[in-house]
Length: 259
Image (cartoon, rainbow, N blue to C red):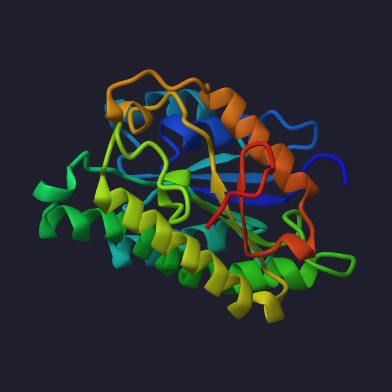
């Protein structure tokens, strides 16, 4: 399989960091999507300026107001995307929006656990449910047999911080809220791979690497990987994955990450 070819894609948390990187790389593909939907909390705000500039140059980029922790906002975004697609399905959903609270185990709080879990785990569940009819439509309308990321796919941006086997960088940043939410997101990915297989929808969890973003710098050190390298790497891996890989946990280079 060559490069990723999708007619439509939705990226959450698309105004900065890895989300913005995904949008930029999708638009730059030799065969870019007919529609790239960029979900962000405040499309007209200061933090979405880069996205606004991109949208002014690319008529196929649509900025969608989306607060991933608000079920009403999710419902409205799904309706807006469906309207724009005019009866065709959504090929690719990238659940990228995520947060972290850099707490230590001893000072972890109910409020932070609930907030991080809502954004990092529950929101991808609710978004996938809301967009399921469009993902099903894409799977049904795509030629060929088997599942792959060019037909219909849910991509959950996880982290090796959620690996129960490895518990990476514990000394650097404990962030129990984040680790637990990503471990739960990995299980959600497995559940989706089993529950949505009959609909022809592929699912995968990604560790994007330790990336130079606001979230990546929470531990206080400068991460080694650029947003550009991470987003490009993940899209390249997506183009190569096939049905047997659905429900797996990969990194931006395609390596299997330990659960």
